[in-house]
Image (cartoon, rainbow, N blue to C red; front, side, top):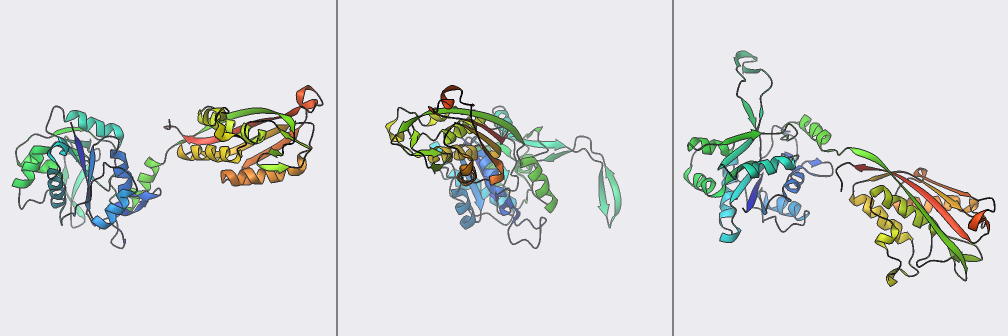
Length: 389
């Protein structure tokens, strides 16, 4: 089945704030407009998204998602039903093979629709022609008249309707073309008026529609991903070699010998990269920069650390702290520690207070004690969302 979603963004949202310059679906939420989150939620589950609303604003905003699934925006109407009809007609004008079999209709002001809910609606539409998610009314309902209780409404079998609401495309198109003069608050109402059954499935309390200012705070609480601590360790060794500069932790160290290696052999940055990759469970530096690959010959190891930083950023992680121990008899590294810390903090775009660097010896024992090379051990502590892959 081809699946489309009509994303509604034509409302003015006066209940949210009469003084707001932007409709609520364009209010910033965790770094992006509300409707951006809504569109992003559907991309993995549908074949196309049909935005409805202000064409100038929406086309520019949707382009940031960089997806060929997003169709050009069509203008909305005065009422919600008019906007849905505009979206349905736009889908009907697609080439026949691109027209959807089922259509989901979603409020652009609902940014936190759970993936499982989208899948449940799609699955249910294999057996019925219309389905909505809804949440049972838990509170006692009172009808108001002039500030006083007029009556109590029995809440048994009452539900709060949510979106996305799902429909087979052909009956949805037919009903919208037939109905005139009815201001329906949702498309299930149109099916009800036509005498067609509409299935109810369980909705989700986190699927909040941004309606009032306090809803924004609730959405932020639901949408902020829980971060969990992860740790990784790295260890690297390089032998001394003549006629090569010595680089440690991103800076050049004055010394008569350098380190042997395919790249610039910065043992400090190599161990640190391995620690970050380890915390991400993404292998080691050789996984990302194979030593047999000629393009990394004499490469500046700072680019490896920048790559590790970008991998961490892609996974939405943050560095808690780094602890690096350099092991050698000579050169004496204590005078250069502050410069190393500054360089690493700059490369990773973190506060220098999160970077610890120590230098020690092995009391003349082993290959470092014999001044044959330098070893480094690094530990990286990070925070990362628990749902990353």
